[in-house]
Length: 151
Image (cartoon, rainbow, N blue to C red; front, top):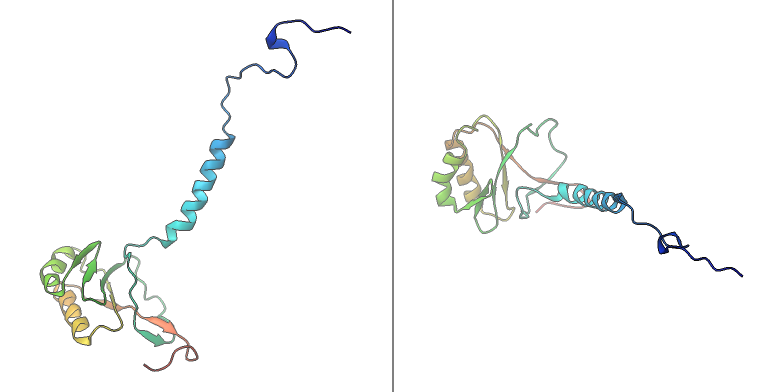
């Protein structure tokens, strides 16, 4: 029997160090991150709170969604939300005209909590109109006649 004697770098099972970078794990991680961002990105919205909108029968109006949107929301406690700002209905009288300056030609989508008194919704519509906005769209949820009913 013969025994191999030689330098350790030439013995079987031992590899020499390589100067190349293995990018396969990096590509795998980047693809996983891409998939995660593709799934989570549509769920992110400017309005991070949920408002229960009034319900109505039928579908939306064709072409009613403007190319650029701006929405003003009022939640169940009466707090007005616009562009990441929060303020009371009283503060909205001074804040909304300032924040809507230069954007009066773009329609405003009004999202109001369904249990909110009508008086507050009309007051907010008046404030938006006084800010110079001509078109106010009111957001609603649709339901079929079988699911919902008159409330």
